[in-house]
Image 1: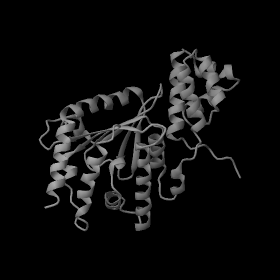
Image 2: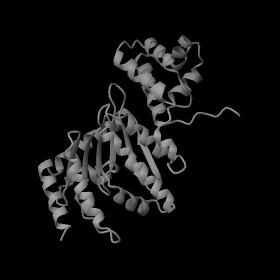
Image 3: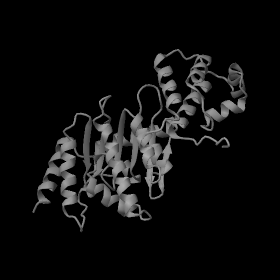
Image 4: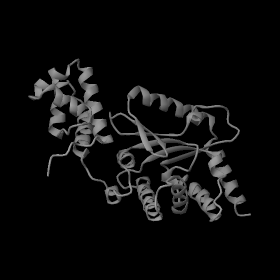
Length: 289
């Protein structure tokens, strides 16, 4: 079988970007840094642009060349190098999970925390199975019923990060009030169950939930929804933007900071957590009438 060119994944891109930043901070050119490893500059360039794999020991050697001595940095970079080719549970669904979605799931599984602004649908980690099937079917217009069912299974499986033994994912989500008024004609109970699910999840210590009211003043969320995924240690955070044909990623440190600042302002414009729970409870009770 011929050698296949590595497909850049989010993990590999994060690793390459981190190595590039440390090299630049050390004031070394590609050729100078590569020479210390007995490599060509083009090989190091391929590593930094996520088009070539680097072993954990090689990544550590590069960090030493760049004058890094922080054990936390070594652990984070070596971990990324080790996991760059790791196959996740979602590979079982590779026939229906698009590469960009697989990238996102890998980010989510590696993350320490998530901050999300959701103006259109309830965040996937908060969805009930029925809500997931309905919304996936509505958005994935080219998918078969079997593929919709499989994607709903994937969405449910992702939620394990909220209660994982190694440390639950911390999530802070701001959901627009309009999302909570959505109705499902075929199964009216879908939204009622979803509202109850939100109330239950809000009791978890690692979940912070706010609602952006219909009466809110203008805020940066008017530009659209986004998910800011945060990682432990020195590794850079990543922003995910979704649309009908998949996801795109914002990975530059300065660009990600724009979204982090925007999220702070979105939080300030949203209802408090107490008022959020009161509103969701009121809507859940009204749905029973």
